[in-house]
Image 1 (tube, rainbow, N blue to C red):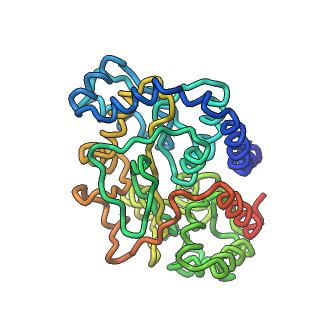
Image 2: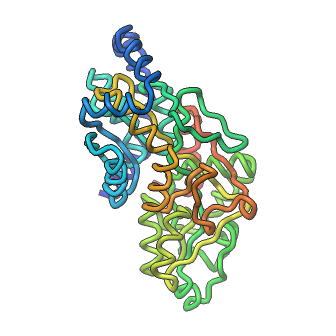
Image 3: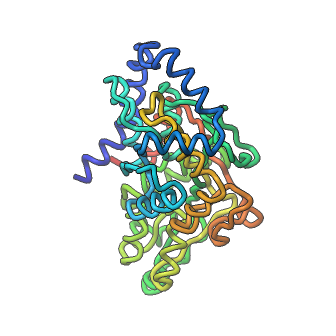
Amino acid sequence: MGARQRLNRALAPLLATGLALGLAACGSSASGGNGSAKAASALDAMSPADLAAAAAKEGSLTWYTTFADTDVQPIVAAFNKQYPNVKVNALRLSADKIPPRVITEQRGRKYNADVVSGDSPQLAQLLQAGTLQPYTPKDISPLPAGLKLPKGYEGIVYVVTTSIAYNPTVVRQKGLPVPKSWQDLTSPAWKGQFSIDPGAVNWYDSLLRSMGHDKALALLTALGNNKPMFVESHTQALTEVQAGEPAGAATAYGYKASSLKKKTPAQLEFVNSNPLPSSLNLIDVVKNAPHAAAARLFVDWMVSKTGQGAVVSITNHTSIRPDVTNDPTVWNESKWPAAWGEPNLPGADYNKELSEMKSALHAP
């Protein structure tokens, strides 16, 4: 099963690119025609109250998301406190599964999803394939300095930061040096003692943009030569470190590391780098969404102060909104300025970076 998942992770972006070409070849037949365009324009111009009324008439929406399984239903419940007449049918997928799923459905003239949310490299694939509907949320927050998103695709759910995590008890027992940088994990003492996700393109892309290509690739090559264990998710990396095998993780999400540290401080610690690799998790309306009003209402809520407050309190993710308080051990730009990855990474660049990562790390 593990080998198959790794193969799927490697093939997903290639599949998405191929399907995107097929979808583009279909031309305007998948666009819904002028009637859909007029309906979308009318919905976009609605007041919040009128949009909520229209969404209540539709009654439901379908949301494809990368939120953790344990977080999905609490977020839906928070939305339903404000909008009880709109049922949210959520499907949790890994980031690399969302592009081929949506593209395959649309290529077959099936429009199941209303809203998608996920890591920016994967949503960029959907945007480039023409499977999304432009919509600018009503209460959108300004983008962080240095970032740009295409107009109509600016919905940001949260910021993801990548940190180093380790088990302080095991590190002490094994006499390992406390890792304070990724370079520390390349030392002989840490050989075979840490894990890494060879599909963490958002992390590698951040390193490329902050360090330059040659230095970033040299770092990954040195990490790969130090015999890391391979993991398929950031959550898996942290739970294994908590259990003590391996002693550390090179690709841990800061929000999750902080949450787990609070529960088991003797088994988990994490370190933020300066600059801090950071990337966006985005939310967009899907083209020809069957519940177009409910889709817009959900996106509006998700990026609003209320929605972002719920996201932060439920998941400990980081919001870009200045009026929402984040976990200061995860996000403090005065201490750890962000090293942003490209939020609209072209498919060819994604495939190249993924291939380069796997080669440098000696990953299957």
